[in-house]
Image 1 (spheres, rainbow, N blue to C red):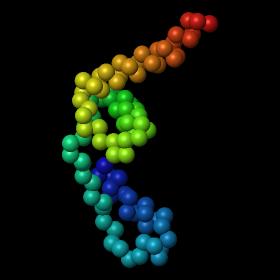
Image 2 (cartoon, rainbow, N blue to C red):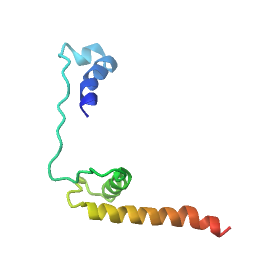
Image 3 (cartoon, rainbow, N blue to C red):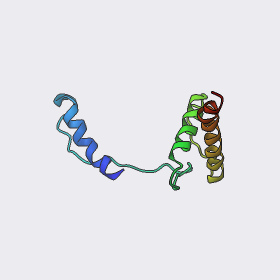
Length: 96
């Protein structure tokens, strides 16, 4: 995230009109991690975690925090996702 935090002020100054940006100094944005939320540190879990976050948000939770997620639950998400993909993509090939 550090390279993005450094680039964003330059991009903002380039895109915004000069009068909107003013004479503010170009300093990197501060980036910090929220505490108490699930941190995805395993490789390959990005997709299932992102899908679950979207499902929680789409279900009407105004502040989806995902604080209750664990690696065990993410493993279950991956299994369900694999079974759904198999059911929707592979099984129809055998039924033709």
